[in-house]
Length: 250
Image 1 (cartoon, helix red, strand yellow):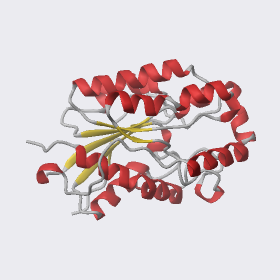
Image 2 (cartoon, rainbow, N blue to C red):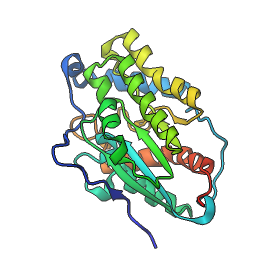
Image 3 (tube, helix red, strand yellow):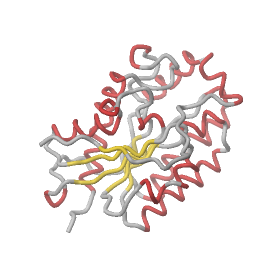
Image 4 (tube, rainbow, N blue to C red):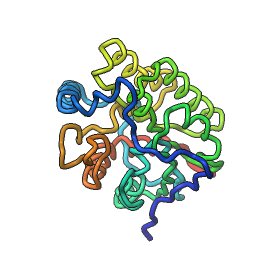
């Protein structure tokens, strides 16, 4: 039986906002073409880094794995039906591969890394076998100090580690209109945390859709339904590697 992913119930008062353009980051949309071209060039020059062995296998222990996609509007599926959101499409792709997996959509539009940290305990319930951590885009768009972003992500990973919940880290790249120094500091967060904690890393969530108008909504920031399918197709091998590292459930 094919099961669909399950969305979390967001407590009353939780902000529901898409990726936003704040302060200096408002120039992102105006210079989107140049930004996408630069990112595409960088991605062509370097293949994704994954800190795990390649493997495809049934869910550990032969039981259904409970995963949580903890993220912002990119995971939540901004302007898309729930069935077209990243967690739902990823779940279906994994099940077609023969993996018994359920993925909870714990994406909250407008969330920063600090917001993710503050709601971590109720977003990731006990019994979760693994977390796909996709946060940071709003931090960059708001120009938040990368040190604060790093600190929040570090705290999320450390708390999940204490709960013995494995993490797959999904990276983001900073808009280049925020300057070279900001970009270097922000972009370094994800590979360095992955190295520190020995995590499976997918360097850039939007790889494969940047610069393609047909795969992005009118705001130029959120993927269309087709764009989500491209993201899932590209990230799928890394998720499979992550699943292969999960311990068998008792």
